Image 1 (cartoon, rainbow, N blue to C red):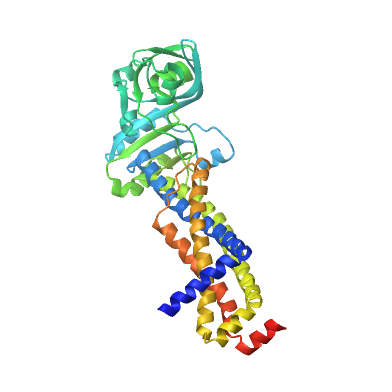
Image 2: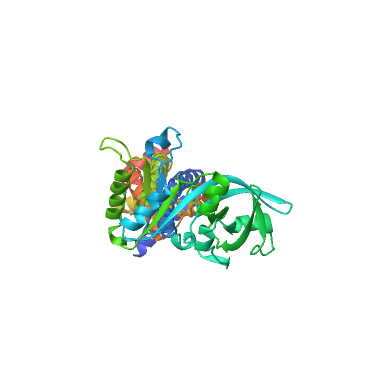
Length: 407
């Protein structure tokens, strides 16, 4: 044990003595480990974000959009869902606990006194906040009587409150939407941003009858319907049943594509996993290349170090050092360098992750997995690329080493 401790001390002294070699080894290893650390943190963060979004979306919910994938791909606006579709789904699907229509008016002009803004107007039923599990933090929901009576009442998001009302209590105040006076009856709680970066709090929710008749001049078509399913375990089965039901209602032939699109929690997870996958592939390739380069740098610098330290090796062998002692010393130097590089890489990865968060739109989560992955990879690089120089040093014969150094 004492012999091993002495060898490790010699390794530490050698690492401090060859400063330029140490710097290049640390730099190459730390960059590779930093990339791997970001990969692990991004993967953990993306999965956490996926389940957070699913929880916000509703693990028992389906969202049906008007217009099929083909129409969206070529930029066509296709109206296909109707208010009668909503009624038919309510009547035909006992598993559906809530079915609400939704219609939208993007970038609508809103004003309160001298303040003006543009926001998203959503027309829906009085169950909007309940269907999205989105509590009203001030005031109350508009009622079903408001829907039937085409009344000018609204729920507003937190961003709209800050833009138009500031510190003033908006409940009971009237704002103008496209010139129409609308009473604010409630304020939605804060939601943050969507996976695409949209501000979810920048919206006004009104009775769909008011929006369709007074703003859109529409009586039939809607943008989407939201369906909450009581039987969450069989959500995929109910989604397929709903798809077939709507195809039959819209008289779509067997060879024709859907003229609507159903979004489920599984679709959201697939999207985020695909998004994360592309990031992992990019950073993974970068990290592997960096680690391979780091390994070659380490191997070449250690081979050079063997030549420079031939005299030292010869003297040590001549004074009783075994081949295994020399082998262990060089491997210890390699492991010491790669361990230090691994720790630096983890620190760089965590700091870089903090800087990348605004770009990635989700929080990177650094757990023990990132630490273990980083350290294991750094040790693999140290042993793999340090073994050959260590063997070469250990195989030097004492007399040859001394003669070579003297020459």
